Amino acid sequence: MNKLVYFVMVLNLVVCFTALAKQGETEPFNTTLQVKLEQYPFPEDISGKPSRFTFLRKLLEVSSGAKKVLGSDNIESHNAYIAARKTYLLAAQEPDNDKVNSLLDKTVKLMYEAIRKASSKQLLDRKKERDYKRKLLSVKALLEALERIAVEKKNIEDTNKLKTNILEIITVADDLIKKHNVDKARELLDEAYLLTKTGIENMRSGDVLVRELTFEFIEEEYAYELDRNDTHQMLVKLLIEKKLASKTDSYKKKINDRVKKAKTIRKQAENFASNEDYSKAISELEKSTKELVRAIRMGGVFIPG
Image 1: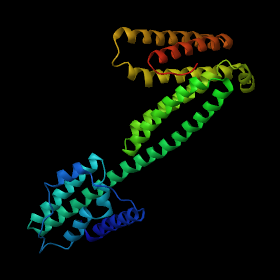
Image 2 (image 1 turned 135 degrees about the vertical axis):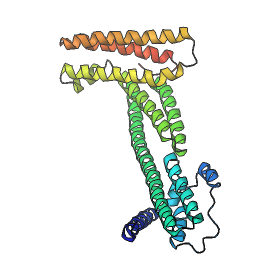
Image 3 (image 1 turned 90 degrees about the vertical axis):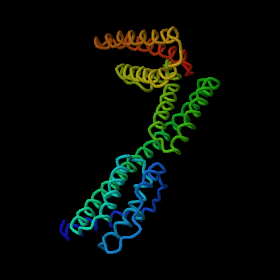
Image 4 (image 1 turned 30 degrees about the vertical axis):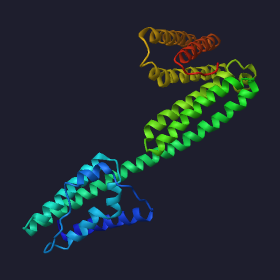
């Protein structure tokens, strides 16, 4: 590698580290990685070696990029870092200066790769956490709507049961976020969202006044009922199937029979809709959704409706 190329690589790294430092981000050490690195301690004596050794020691050990890697949970980043450290140690043991420089060039490349992979994982996690917070705001807004509708419908007691269940799910999800288990937290939050949405839709179902105000065309009402049915089917998949794992085959069959019946009725509704008989289609969709509600309740999840 010529001096100009090396200088550009170093400059890029310095810019990267400076930007990260300005963000004020500090990462705890990943204990698993730390254990692995005990096998590759830095050399105590590098006298007589090129000055690059000192720079690369800082790059590998104390730079903001190193902290990013050492605090990361990204396995690919860890592997690249370990490879960089091994290469650095080989360079420290190599007597031939040309080979030393070649090994140090490789160290820089591997370290750059480790930083990139650690950063991309953390950027993705931060995006997921932002998405989680936005979804949480949506759930809380729906919960407020659920409470208002419960008062209108005089269905406060049943709604409070549902609300308690939803809040318990949110609490568990928030705890998972604190442990950086974003994917599992989002899965639970999606369940809370579906439960809240379903509670609202079920209390609104059959409300003629709302329908007259909301739906200008009967096709819109059909689309609404189709969406409501979809929501219940997603609830069956997310909630009931998880709870059935420990149940007997006969118990599972009772619930699955309800779901199959619901799907059959929905198919009839879709046939009516294809012939533009939306009144019958809506009626059949409502029957299908009621079967799904029964299946969900049989699975141990309370929802109004």
